[in-house]
Structures are given as C-alpha cells and as structure tokens.
Length: 294
Image 1 (cartoon, rainbow, N blue to C red):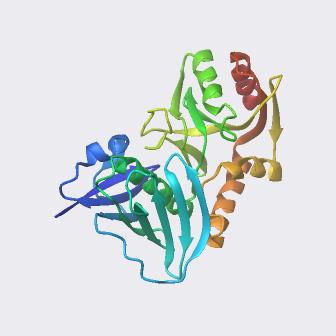
Image 2 (spheres, rainbow, N blue to C red):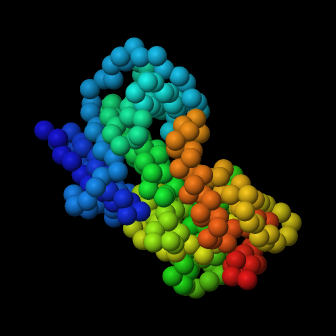
C-alpha cells in the first residue's frame, strides 16, 4: 500500500508518494505548513520506494559531484533524464540513495534505504533539487539566500557561503521592530501578475523557519564583508550577474538555463538590486534598507 501526499510551495502543487507504513509528519516535518489537498495541476510527482535501484546500463554522463552536508553527491544524465546519487556514509555496501527524474522534471522515482536514520533529510534534499528544476518552467527560481519581511515587503540577501547572509538578516530583525525572518537558506522567487514575490519554503538550512507566506520583493542585496557599510545600486547586466550565482539550476541543461535567464532578466528589471559592502552591525541594516528605498 502507498499513500500520496500533496504540498504547495510558492503556489505550485506537487505530490510525494510514500510506502504506506511511513509517517509523513515524522519523515518531512518541515513540510507540514505546506500540506494541502489534491486540487490543481501538479508540477511534478515523486514516488518513493525501498526497492534497490537497478542500473539499466544506459550510457550516462557525469555532470558533477561534490561532498556537502548531504554526503557525497553525484549528478548524472542519460538519454531519458537525470539521476542523482547520494552516499552519506550511514549505510555500508555502496551507494545509499538514488533519485531518477525525467528530462522535464515532472516525474521522478526515489530509491531510498529505510535503514538510514537520516533518510528524511535525504528525501527533503531530493525534493528540493527536483523542485528547483521544475519551478523554472513557472516563472520561478529557487535562491540560496536569507530573506526577511518588513512592513508587507520582502528583502533578500545573497552571497557565498560564509559571507554573513544570516548575520545580516539578524541585524535587520534587531534593527526594525516589524521585521521577521521568512526563510534563512532557500526562498523561492516567482513572478506573478507582473510582480516579483518571495515565498517561504520547507528548506531553511540550519534555521527552523518554514513559513507558508509570501511578500512582494522590495530589494535584493549581494553581500560582501568589508570595513564599511556601502550599498551600490546595480542595473541591467550587472544586476543579472549579481543574482545568477545564487540560483539553483542544472547548468548543463540548455532548456533550464534559458528559462532561468528569462526569469532573472525580468526580476532584475523590476526589483532594486545592489552590492552591499557591510560590517556585522545594525548600521549595515539601516544603510541597506535606506539605499533600497532611495
């Protein structure tokens, strides 16, 4: 027996089908605020099985591999689509978890090892990667950023890991009484009815902030640690270049890249984007907020 669960993130519906004995509330607790009914068109369907993955022998191209908080991750492409392999070292005897997706990312199978105690975290990461590709077809993009809301508007802070995105967001929270954290790692931007909106998601890094909320985007700042607080407005290609490195998309997929570029051009034309040199202090938050509005 299997159970199918529906979720809506950034206004987009998708489903995850689990073995009947699995508890979705335990396995994916951060998804609870996004649980919904089945009404609407799904952008993708993910089916989870405990059956071992059987390599069909198709020729594959290795697109990339890395080691991060998920473990050792490999991304491959074959004639039918994509395959992601995750070995987090929790289980012996080779590759632990595999997800196979079609070329349009609207259908995927996840082959999970239930003896892995971190299986829920792995599944959440698989859904995040699948969603990040699927959302590109719907004027959206998954962004590596910290995002706050203030006075009915949202502000995003981009930067390399270790730049201080969460620190800068915290300065906003401490400086402005009506400021709240929307997401601390992986918000989604979507263009809806001509407006750029920022959405909370089930993925917020080490900070448990899983809000099913959205706000119009007032400004986006790419941060750089510096000895001063200075905001430099960016426009056109410079604004586009500031946004691109923080966006989640498979770079080797020309179709996905075209969709990403189209969305980023529109975002950079509609939203205030800037380069924020800053210190870890409240004065940086005040300078950033003032510069975005002026």
